Image 1 (tube, rainbow, N blue to C red):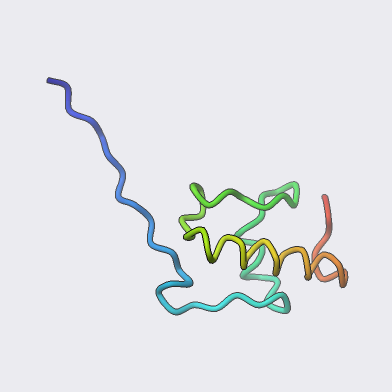
Image 2 (cartoon, helix red, strand yellow):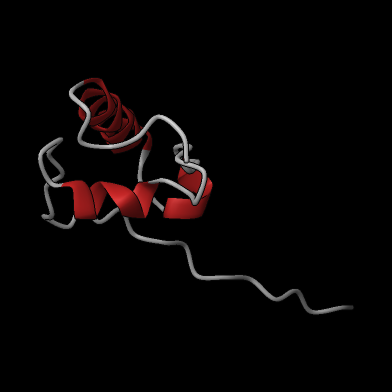
Length: 71
């Protein structure tokens, strides 16, 4: 039988205690790629509840011009 290389599942950083706010642009940049798109949760490791929270905060930051819509 072939052995499979399984990766360790990422832990949601917000479940661990870190908060994300629309005013904290440096933290929000971790959840966007070079083009400014929101990165999916399978890449970032956030849970479904917090991924929805992150996307809402990114959209708020874009609306008040703290983050660009695209680069």
